[in-house]
Length: 200
Length: 332
Image (cartoon, rainbow over all chains, first blue to last red; front, top):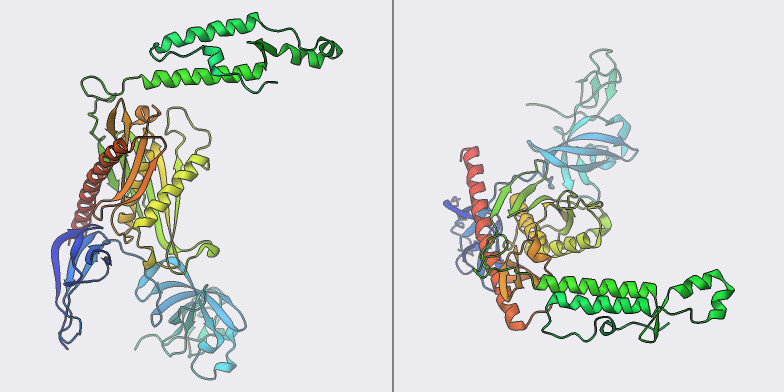
């Protein structure tokens, strides 16, 4: 597979600047095509970048983009792995606030829901939510879908997904013992969790 | 009670060539006449019957064999005085024989522009925009989740705008700087103008908030607000078709004037505020609250459009300077 050629110019663009004709270039991010004049205009402020297409693409026009400087906050997408804090545990689901998407922290509040059938991969009908999560747990989860209007649907049905860190009743950070149990270092008491496999 | 006293009755027939000061004389003499011919109560029997009626009877005047009440006279007199003031103002000199305006500008000269980006740390984008002594701060938040779900639009972003004047912004301190008719109207105008340039269809189910506040008001606040909002939107990295820039122009002493200040604005002459997309050459806002012959109007509007383009040039400069600064700080 051949790599696409990225050409970054020294040119600065501001909204409304003409970047090229529609017959010659394709609008990418930060650019738009005005239908009335068949011209491609910039819609952001930043450096102009031209990306040439792969040689086997049917459309051989290069794409022009304007790379802005404003970093927008990370947004969870289906398929991305997120870190979330459990806020509420019910019989059939648990709610969680998403803190990080991949390595980046989010700037706004996003809520997620882990449904009972998404907690683990096996025996999904025998899951007890209260024996899987507690409010305050830090969970690694996969975004299944954009969910309903309120929350993303999250899943912990993989070995590396589940509770990363949890506090015991005594208030200490617990140590994972097995994939279903964590132990308090102060009292030696074990609590049930859906533990994530960390490392290796 | 007869319906109204005619102004002709108070002032006499108004000759066109009389100087403004001479018009007061017939007014005073007719007032004196009013006093002289103050009539006895219309129905003496009625007024004797009750004190209440006597007072109302005292309030009745007889002028030119017509009966009118005191409040009506007061109303007509105040109206007349305002008319006089208007006439006096219209005779005021806004452009000197040397061709200079009150603040020393030429008719087609704009006030000094000054802009700064990134003044509100918490906002996604912000700017301060100054046109002479008019100073406006704008802050943009978003695109973010819609706060009120019933307002959510499934095909485009919701743009909200709030305009307010700081109560120290004008000469006399304002009691309630928010929520009156004027600011609601200007909020709406700014929102519609900005909506025309934002590519709202790229951000469905989200909301963009624009807050503008006037820190110093010296005429042309609505133009300055639109310019500040444009800069703040560009700073927030919200995709736009083009900048919207706005400028006003007026027509006083038979001269088109660019970028009116407060004194020229309150002269009561025509004031054309226009907002354009300078690169696309499109008008997104046009406001005028006076009458103007069409050929003069076209001249004035052309002048305002030229002003908008000059502002756009300045805004582009400020933005690219800001981008270079950001790149330098990041070490690109």
